Length: 52
Image (spheres, rainbow, N blue to C red):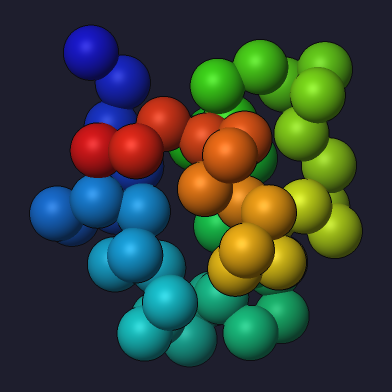
């Protein structure tokens, strides 16, 4: 199981890291199909990352 965030990926939305960087690349399900603009987009990111 791969984890992303304290409870899930939405934990990042309230962090000081998120506004500038988005969700960390370590959360990507497939790093070759996951870029920085995807990780800053709250609509797209959930389709590209580990959900828990």
